[in-house]
Image 1 (cartoon, rainbow, N blue to C red):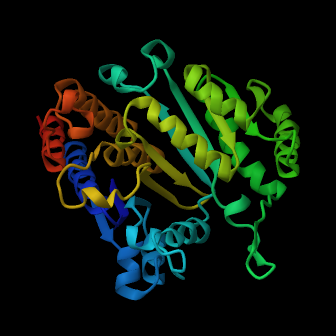
Image 2 (cartoon, one colour):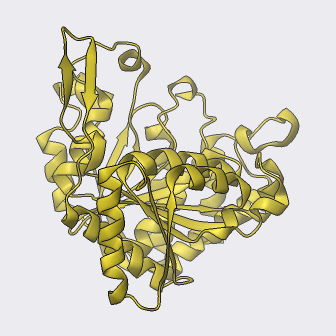
Length: 355
């Protein structure tokens, strides 16, 4: 199979972890007789520096022409510390999601047997955790009306949802639940927020179309609490943009490192795959960035965009092997031991694939 993949390395450690994902993907292609056509493009602070736009039209066209998109990270501290900046790297991410119609963020959280003791939560609370959040990405408070009034002393951000936005996300949730344990949790704040009441009534109306799926409704604050108490009680969860942003970061620590968790952002015609961690500018160029989340994102890309489940499973197999063998970066080493470099981890995975 010929795979056309847009490559958006982005900022900070993005290029370093992307390089390892490309290396591993190329090894998979060699093993399974595929060919990959990689097309790099600028985004984030790198694109602002080059052309003044965090998501240029040229990059958008590269993404439209590709079968899938592999993305590194966005962000730079010089923008974080400048509240007056008119253009920010993160605006590129929002613009990309909106222009490509990436309305659903698929964020799995799972544990690795060899890393259970790295989690801040007790082993007995997290063992067997295997849940997936579907977060709505292109609506809600991040895209609603916003502004200042009263001479700038009052600020407002508006959370707006349309029924069809909720329906298309919920369909993804129901369909995913059907392939798993047939359990779905809708996370909202319907006791307070009108937008959440629309979420709840919309999903309730859809239950009849999926009679095999058991649906429960929980308030976001209750889910935030239960995620650290009994995360293995959840399977598929759907929620709005802001709630999903917060809850998925909370869930990410369950595994023991944000450097391990992949994600996908999917729409009707396009799909983007990225690690959940940020650009980690302090680590740029030091060779200490954990590439495994990006490599596992590539595994999701093979499976979800191309239906290549054996190839995705092979990537996860060698990642499991690297964790078991201690071939990991310093964030996963015990007792402050020196970790392997980003490149060494990638080289190890390639060697295992081609062995």
